Length: 95
Image (tube, rainbow, N blue to C red; front, side, top):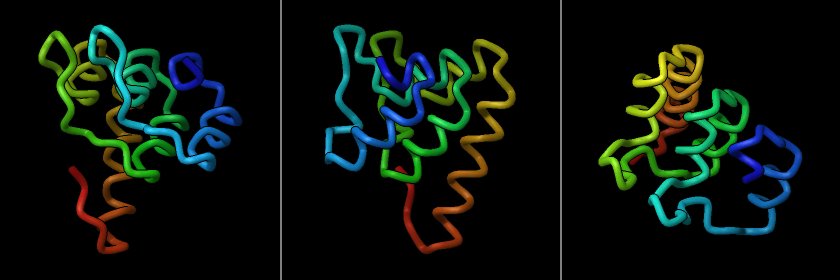
């Protein structure tokens, strides 16, 4: 819910505590899905840089990127691309 509501400090704290950032709810939405759905670009970046998977499908068979595109959240798409580029420049493979 921290990612869904854009509470960046809490997202950062939870990441630092080693929570499963790819955990999902009944609809199979991960924190990254929620951050994308609600347009929280900074949470999106933090989650991706911490290793959140971009390839997980929710119950609607949509990835976090799909949800951002479907909702017209182009700033979220830009945030995803920026975080992925940052990881790839560091030699990290993104899934």
